[in-house]
Length: 421
Ligand code: GDP
Ligand code: IMO
Ligand code: MG
Image (cartoon, rainbow, N blue to C red; front, side, top):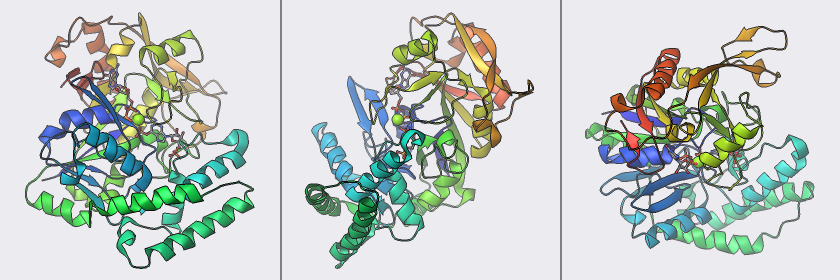
């Protein structure tokens, strides 16, 4: 069998958590392959609203193996909090959650470094979630990081102390005052807690599952426009959020990739700093934020809002090899009489381009829009895509034609059931 990949095509928060939870019963395995607690994936069903940060969104479904893969950076403190919150909902992740021995650990000093680096950047800050993601991946790449498997080594305490002291030295250099002792106690307790889980070489587990004809869904975090290579660098996260990241983040070959589900909002949002060509600073942008409840699931920050950016969507579909598009939050646009899609960017010299490029993210560009008639509020959730209002079908067809990939799922509300496939 193959690994199907579900990933965000915009700046994150497309609704990945909702759809992974919706699709999970079709899969034997759900696996996270990159990112860490910077992610906030919201699931809603049976009157429950729950936000997951590090644990895969298949955790609420029975008989599914959930994997935190080697490409993830794991914060043991947040992990413990997440498990406790799940236990309150009668979910016991010990039964079906496997954590890769090769996943990197986020230390409390990584979080402090994240804050110190952002402070030092001043007005040029990334707008990081400050969860320690950048510094943890930095240590991974510079070959100094600690991994989940290390926590069972006899000399883990010494290895940890070495990294902590190195971090404290940098923090002193940055003149960042930091009292690590209290957090360290919590961290060391969380490490003991983590030891009670199944820590294994999950690359073997995933490949064995595939050989045994099991289906695997890889759950992306963040989105293509936050990818460290292809996103709006430097305003990005520190991992490869794209399909290729699923290979390196789980230990599966490219030939094992099956469907690639590219998920996007019917408009755009972004939280944190960086270019956002279609951003609306007016009343319409405010309405999008209010109707769509666009406030960060991890930090609570208001999300920046704007119309759908087609050149960016095409680019994301291209680098990910998207085979099916999933369109989210179509209900939110139902509140507008007129809806716009950005089809190209007008450059300062007056020319119009339809392709995202290296330069584009620095230039002042003016979006060129095509206007669509709104579809109003839907009285009920239809059984099939065919039954959607004709104005919405027209909007869908235009995107499909432009991107060259079919839209096979439309989401019309935050609940599991408000989904048409
Ligand atoms: P993720 O990070 O991609 O999992 O997305 P988030 O959970 O951060 O943000 C998506 C938000 O939109 C959450 O509050 C969801 O409950 C909500 N949501 C998801 N799909 C829909 C939808 O179709 N309509 C509406 N109105 N809300 C949705
Ligand atoms: P999910 O998985 C939206 C953004 C941050 C910041 C930049 C770098 O819920 O879609 P980092 O903490 O990685 O150093 O932040 O990336 N960011 C996200 N934005 N959704 C996310 O995850 C994000 N994870 C990081 O706001 O601009
Ligand atoms: Mg989110």
